[in-house]
Length: 405
Image 1 (cartoon, rainbow, N blue to C red):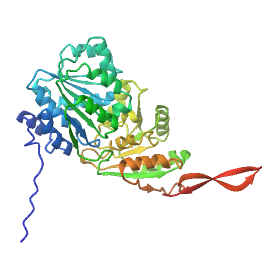
Image 2 (image 1 turned 180 degrees about the vertical axis):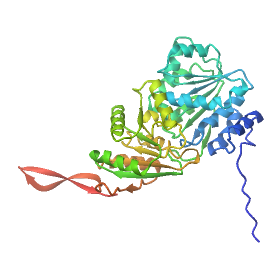
Image 3 (image 1 turned 60 degrees about the vertical axis):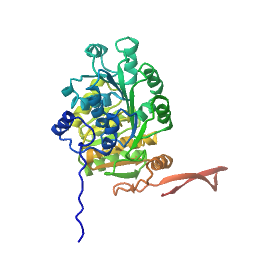
Image 4 (image 1 turned 90 degrees about the horizontal axis):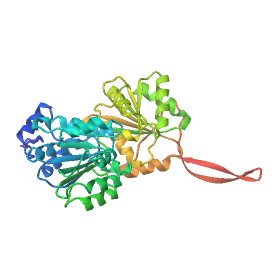
């Protein structure tokens, strides 16, 4: 007679979390830690330096927020969390606010695009948790409205994105003003060489915690690739929006393109908003809030939003334009399929973008399945240009040979 298999449910018990925080998590209906939380929280509570790698949407913020709150509750120090975008800074503080106030820990968001005076006023209240973008943090340091001599925990969140955005010199300058006796935690979806060098230079024997290979997308995301001519993208988009009726996050390669697409969607009768670096902080907040509440069905964004949007329940991500950087594909599609939900990621590639798709597939270690739409003509990738022997006007005529792969 076979023994019945007993499955042990993974909970927050046994991770070394203080009972008061466990109670707060229970009140929030957080009962089961994600893999990155299960691995990172005990190490972080013990004070280890950590390099944490996990795909987007897997609970990285709480993986460091819980240990930070517990460690600060028994010390007089501060925590600095550096993030790449304004939106992510606001969302990180939202996570802290779920558990920190119960321990008398106040927080502040220091970001560009917002007035300095309210931030200065908030800093005078001596917040224990500072969430900041590098540029605005340096502004405050230069004006002597903020000192980092009491920081005992440093978090570099979405570190690879910060490096992509050119923040490495700023990060290096900031770290010089933080006491060397500190705990440093670095969280990222991918691990490029620059992150390895930061870890070696500024961390003490960091523990590498990886719950998925670098560049892996969430398991429950269905991916599709359409090969489509540029002039046919609008028609394909219209057909897909009829097919998938839920919320859609649509990515454009440029700010100007995002505005153009948003206007095009409005003409098609869809409620849409846009979010990119040319929009004010107020406009970006309104767009994101409207998207969360369903006022806008579609949010058109550039890659600035690839890491800055934490909305559970996004049905579909559409890459209207393939990203310049293949790694951004992982971050874009990670906006769907969050918190265990299913999601769909659809990409539009023009016939001459074979190389871009191959770069994405190399990072993802998979082949993107090619789909066709019955309302559009079949297209294929062009692999190379050859010269035919036919001459017209005494010149050799170039002929493209398409190939399906």
